[in-house]
Image 1 (tube, rainbow, N blue to C red):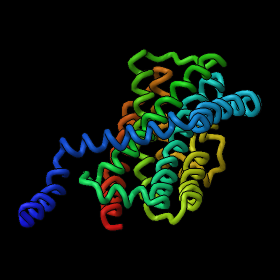
Image 2: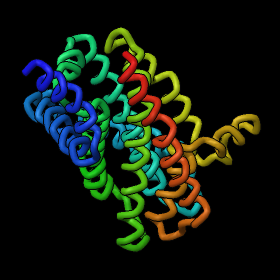
Image 3: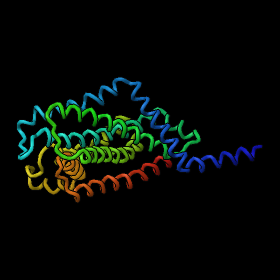
Image 4: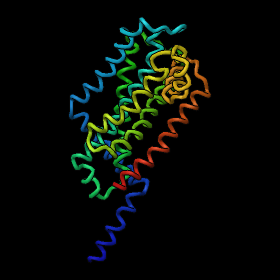
Length: 269
């Protein structure tokens, strides 16, 4: 009997690494994280109000001082705000993982017969859903204040997919920081160090041409700039295929690099 139990115990981890079990466990973890948001009205309010405030702030406070020849500033701004919001939303992954580590939730997960990668896959997928919700809210607000995309419906949807995909990629980068941070506050501070320069040294809020000469090459090589330019082109119907493919390549590359690193780090903790 003892030998039989030992054999079953040894087989469980390998069984849980099959694709079907990984998907099932990931969905369970994602559902757990989404319930935590739904049951906490404060998180829903923050997710809804904060991006709306950014839209209104930039559109009505800074918009009059920023010149965007050939295009209304609100229409120029919205793709940048979308990308900024999903990048900031990706930081929730670091904070959430750090909180679970600090509270011992991750230790509890480790005692369960579940796929180790499911904890991170479920977490990043839940944060992807949060980002999609926020982008939908912002789209409505943008349309109300003058956002006028002139591209095709297919281009509009592709732009939103590109934005959401970039947020998902940033969640995997964020997961690596959350796994290494000792507290949630430390994770939040650490993730904003790369996020702020990436977001603001880009074409999200102002044309790159208006930047100092030493900053232009940095902003042009910035992945945020590529995603913003690609989504802006898709919204306006002026998309450059090379830019769209480059943005998609960045998304795939970030996930391909940081997802395995995060899963490996999780298993080694």
